[in-house]
Length: 144
Image (cartoon, rainbow, N blue to C red):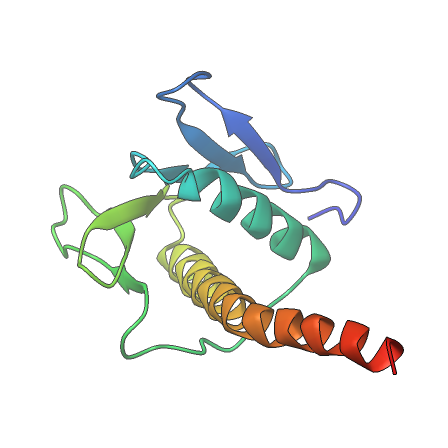
């Protein structure tokens, strides 16, 4: 793959019911997002995944036991690889390339990136109150 060719995001159905598709550097569709749950999570995840893939990130999965996971129905007629949320709902599909090892590797990488995204989001939300309480204390010091 040419490093100057980035992973790209394509909106197959623009508008409220948009369908997110991530294309590999060759321009081939590789990931299709399922329906958004109303929180616009697909918008956020798609941007994060594109940035991470283009930056070459290959994180270890920070939550392999309880986070999002890779699922394969095992049906030869429907060899889809699905990325499911912790509630076992299929949220993304890895489009088959004919190379199962490559498809599995991409699925594991995407799953690790998604779990990393949610861990970072959780830690940024939990640290936000402590920074605001620090801000509240600072003005009182300046009055002394």
